[in-house]
Length: 197
Image (cartoon, one colour):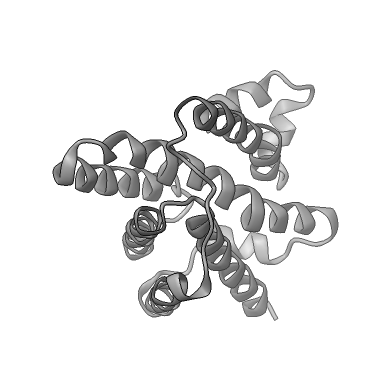
């Protein structure tokens, strides 16, 4: 993400872009998602350790319930975040870009990075390596969501990361955590815009 932000600084009117509501979608759609997909493609072709795989609803029932539980818990314990207020007032093209970024680009790129590369890094070192990878990748996953100020929200994101790691390990596929991440972000987006009315 830092590298992506640096690349955006090389674009014309870069400072205006970084200060606008288009900054996160531009970074995600133009840089982060394509880089994650290209890295995944070459890694998968070389090592075959990160398949997209398959999933079914039966495998996802408990994780879906856990996600709904986390969302409900976060609604009870999480603080009101100022940046969400600005998002709830987006309209037109900015709204469209935000939705595409949050529901499609972020789940794909973040799952490739966190439940793909980072989780895989420890998977082959036994039980201890697996748990270290789950904790480390979940911590880093929560850390990149620095737009949140509430500690409760960051803890919820950490737990969400651990759930997605478990799903990735149990299904041996990336599609399951991608779908669950997209579901979580869809529900969160609906909630944000519903609260603005």
